[in-house]
Length: 476
Image 1 (spheres, rainbow, N blue to C red):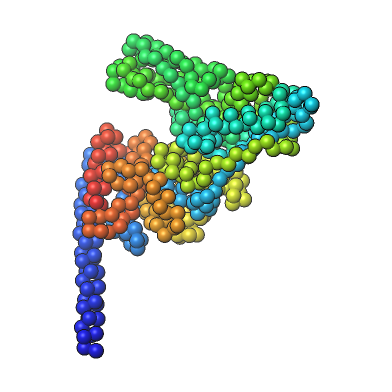
Image 2 (tube, one colour):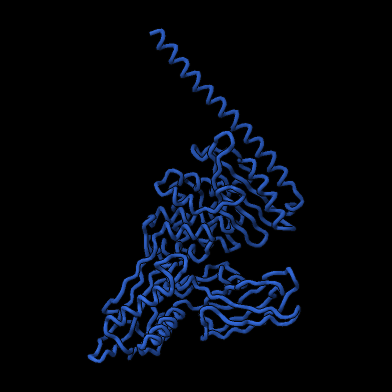
């Protein structure tokens, strides 16, 4: 009995000793973070700017440090962590999209389809993407041509209809800028997204100050009118080329400068992805000896008050990669398009109108109910962070990231985050905004989750980012 009491007392003392050491370590960490953040916030680059940092214990959710944690700031692409966490919760890590190829009418004995070939989208953001073996454009076009051949179709008397109606006609969220929308990172959504709604521009530099020659596009975009106003920039000036186009436009203006010493492919957004898919499918069918001429989108037909008949016979059903594979690239390569598809899909699956506004409201409501986060702390205009109008607090972002540690899919979520500064975290940057959010274990073994944002900094972005990293180094 006496020995038992001694052992018990030792265990109790050991517990309190560990607790004391942990508390001392936490206090020391808080002090180091506070000192580093104060130095950073008083830097001349933030004279007219705002900095916010929240650090939580990743296991308990306790606040280790927070300064301006409840101030809403432009979050840039760190917002993607909130969108992807919500998608995991509401859609599930094995969620997939389906795209169907079918036809209306009938096939004659000599192989003439007296009807339309219809390809219908459900919002798959990866359709035609080279990031996945199954979704590559060459793979899918071959698969669909084979399906048409196997059905005995030799010529289409009707049309190729790209049914892009599900996501509506508004492709981009409110708040996106004109300078962004024509470029690959500003590509808008479509129920029939194709090749991530982008195409490449191959330039040849001239003499400084003279035109830079547009050699070609990849793939062929022969149906677009491309007006090249790009000039050749001085050595070291790099890529300052911007594409300007509106949704569904057939004209694309290229402006800016292409450095004389630059060897880079420039990517622009496709104004009408569904039409582009139908265009590529028609060309592939014709190349395989199957007659096809007329292509049209269901959106165009409805705008002209023409009825769109769904396919009566399905030739092929293509299933996308799973959500966790989509989220991997969404966060790893910061693909804005994926975020906007997720927002609209969330709205669809929750029975709401399929708009960015309704999808964002679902996200805000979800975290308000799950964690009690005030909806005003998640003032979202999109799902990717490209809109400069987004205002998110570092406290709400850190709380969301802390909460997902308990989920069965956390490992997949965690692995989708890139590594910067030897830390697992999502980055974000738009004009005068730099942000990071992620996870780190301190030298004393304290698991941490953090969110840091700076808005309206001045001077060099590279310098500001390095100073920000100096603050985050204290977490290591």
